[in-house]
Image (cartoon, rainbow, N blue to C red; front, side, top):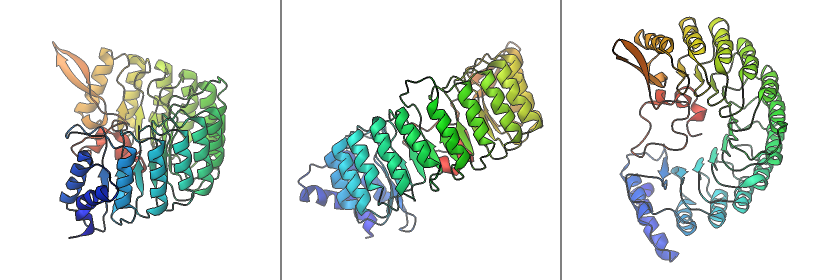
Amino acid sequence: MSTHLSLHKQYLQACQVLSQPENPFIEHMLEESEKADITLTKGITLKIAGNNRLVPVQKVTDEDFRTLAFILSNNTFVTGLDLRYNILTDVGAEHVAKFLQENSTVCYLNLMFNDIGTIGAELIAKALHRNETLLHLRMTGNKIENKGGMYFASMLQINSTLEKLDLGDCDLGTQSLIAIATVMSHNKAIKALNLNRPILYSQEEETTVHTALMMKNNSCLMELHLCKHEMKNFGVERLCDALYENCSLRYLDLSCNKITRDGVKFLGELLKQNQTLEILDLNSNRIEDDGAIYLSEALALYNRTLQALAVVSNNISGKGLVALSDSLKTNMVLSYIYIWGNKLDEATCVAFSDLIKTGRLKPNCTDVDPYEVDGHIYLAELSHGLKRHYYWTPSYGEVDNKDANASLAIRAVAEHL
């Protein structure tokens, strides 16, 4: 029997050796991995996510992870470990850090929404000083705070293999964001970076200014998430000025900020010249009709590289939405557009219904679905979007239709971010 087929038995033996009670959830998931017909050359990702709805879950504790690390440290075929939504603390982070120093095959580690704090962040970040195999780390939702962010900034100065880092919802502060932006100016490895929802108290947008300077110098970063950064028009202007000199960024997430029509005017001018940006997320801002028209002019007449645009909940009415729909008639590259949460008048409903009926806009590539009642066209909401599977993935397996989540369909670098 191949080694990977006996993971379950190895786990039971390790529990006895370490005098650790068996976790039935881990047992079940290891048994499931044994059933998978996977060759040794491909490798497997162990999915032990605490939010699994299909089987009874006993969340993974610090000692549970110590047992897992015991059997995986010298393992050669497990290349991914998904431990999201469990109850790992700083004690568990110590085991994670030791595991990262000993293991040489795991390239994907998801610790999303555990209970790891600043101390755990220090241990994991320092372990990554020496780790040369991990490519993707998700720390999302662990409250590592400003000090924890500083440890990761230091790590980015040393580590040259990590390609995707998610520090969203981690309560990062101004100091750590500036430190990360400064280090990223010279980092040549990171391709995707998530810095969503920091804790900021200043209104002067220092972090956005430093991020803009980073984008001017960084030639490797392909994906950047700056959701909930309190970004206003001044910050967008500085960011756009920097992006004129950037030729690598493909995915820019500016959702849930304070961007108005004046800020979008800078984005519209950028799109007229930019030839690399493929995904632009402006969800939950306030660009209104004028902002939508700025974007539609750039997309209709100039830009031929943007593939996905999200303007959900932006206080746009029929005038702006119809202008965006018209831009799709001349721009054949823009394939994904998300508009729900705006003022969908009858002209908008008819315009997007026509786009879907003619085949210009595929039903899976937008978040609205037309229907007719008493001769009038209306739009219903669909659960499609740029980040549909950011906080969760289907428990039953891989995502069937990647078009329903445009970031997966367009950018491979975004697959796990």
